[in-house]
Length: 290
Image 1 (cartoon, helix red, strand yellow):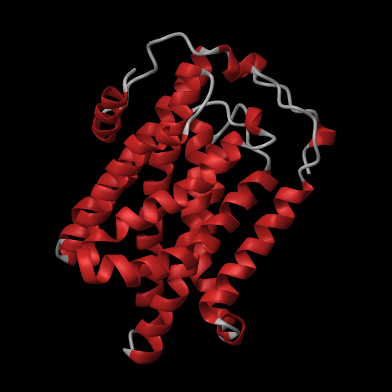
Image 2: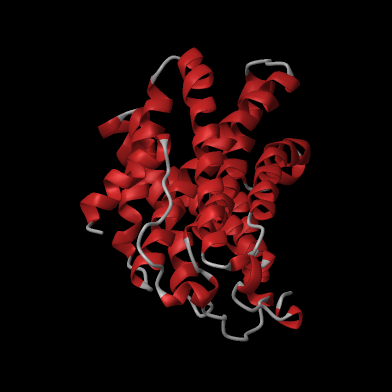
């Protein structure tokens, strides 16, 4: 597929994702190289703490309830994505790395939004900053030492969801503080609203990861440009989410994205089933998974 056709596919998949028609590259069946996964878990935790600490100083610990409430729904969404990957689940250490990346890259997103987005593009332009930054963590996993762990589009959605969740939780702390402390919103209402918004961040980055995974399926390797179709579509939906009235965002865009992601996951699972993953998914020895 050309870059243009992958962009068209990214749009079409929002409504009706179709199975991969071409035979998959042999790389989707490659066993990953044996290597310790502990460093990924350590880096995931460090990146998370650096993101929270740099963004909020010690407030994220002083107001730990806001931190935990902000991350509760994103973590549940990631658990759902990981469990949806039935045949060849990704190592939790690498999922944690992407989760931490999402929180850490929120630092850069905050700076760039203040310097570039606010004066030049307004609130609607935030997605064009945030979506590439979040998705970059998925690319780093796909091209890293354990890149063979990144097999296909379902893997891309899992790692993308993790990066989106880390970012959403970081952002949620500020919004919850503003809504509850400064604007006197009921805590339950604030948490519910931010939990729904968190899903959008997860879905957007999952879309970008899906594009990267499709490139791996079709070509056996990934390039940074392979993120472009999913990132661009995600940024456009992000822009719409930020600019339309709330009743349209929560009444139309949110349920649409929930159903789109559900269909994309189901179609990716069908692809893996057709490729024989039920019987011979890439080998992962228990002793290698930490």
